[in-house]
Image 1 (tube, rainbow, N blue to C red):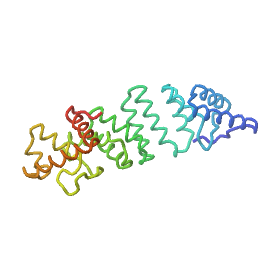
Image 2 (cartoon, rainbow, N blue to C red; image 1 turned 90 degrees about the horizontal axis):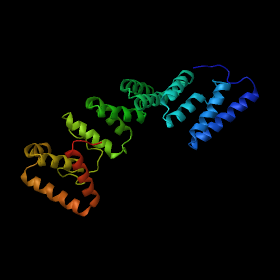
Image 3 (cartoon, one colour; image 1 turned 120 degrees about the horizontal axis):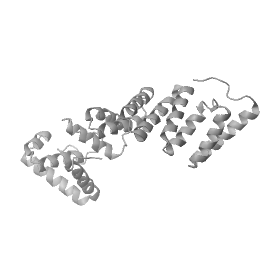
Length: 257
């Protein structure tokens, strides 16, 4: 991290403060081009000026990202990492990963930067989310699954799509679904959660009746009870019915994205 003086006189310091403040305000107003002009003017006066350790490079990089000017953003983020404390680096490495992934389709560099971000801040959700989806999109389920499960552990209120992706991967990897995050619709009864019912009916419809029965420890009489309970529940609760159809459709076409 650079430690050079940030200004040569009180007048210059006030000018830099004003430019920095104006740039932040313009950025918040989504006037990114104008914000870039302010930060660039400040950098040209004193490239080392920063507010609470955050440099003008970092602020300008965020504007470049919004404008999808990834090459410029990468340059500024690398400068920010060089000049600022490690405390901020997790966010900058994450942004670098997104730049390389979105701007250049460079999967390996993106993965490397997501990893660096995670090493600095193991509880940041962004790197797990995008790295997990990157692995998932490339069919690397064994690598994607830990990221998605970590993300769900960090944020149990994650979008339901993540739960579906997780269970889809667990299915493909020959692992059981994890349903502890769902409420039990029929506590103490077999096939008590909606995802259990979806998984069960999906297997029945594909002809694997004995496997479906074995998974949930059912006999024919218990099976009739499951069908009756869920049929009645779907009939009186349109939200359950709609969610059931959505999940069944997702599983039948073998894609959850």
